[in-house]
Amino acid sequence: MILSDTRILEEIEKGTIIIEPFDRAGLGTNSYDVHLGKYLATYNSRVLDAKAHNEITHFEIPENGYVLEPNTLYLGVTLEYTETHAHVPFLEGKSSTGRLGIDIHATAGKGDVGFCNTWTLEISVAQPVRIYAGMPIGQLIYFVVEGDIETFYNSKGNAKYNRKTVRPVESMMWKNSF
Image (cartoon, rainbow, N blue to C red; front, side):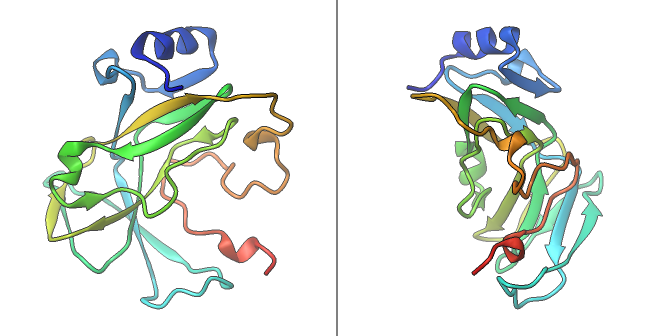
């Protein structure tokens, strides 16, 4: 079951969903619009290694925008910091974003109950497109959880993306054992 606009507002009032900054205008029928933060990052190497720490370079989106190019993975970040303590958050693209050929996540659209942070976006484009800090970039959808939760994400000792940040975070796959 997906939360409706009134249920999202109720959960915000209860403190089980936190969105900062929150703007009532971003609330849709059953979602909340999130915006692109001011930082992007790209990997320093064109060949990435799943067992290595692939370093990134951060940069700020200029006021006149930044042109994303195909065949490059950009890491972006949401302007909004969120906490979700009783629901499963999903981040999806907006149709207006998709119609510009912008994909905001390669595979990581689902958050975990207990996720407390900004969202790193895995951005790719079909053709060159100019983007701007603060533009609507995606929407959060909240699903009801069935059953009790044993370990919330923000209390997992091995959670790799718990450190609060306003910048995109590179893959931490290299911390896994395989």
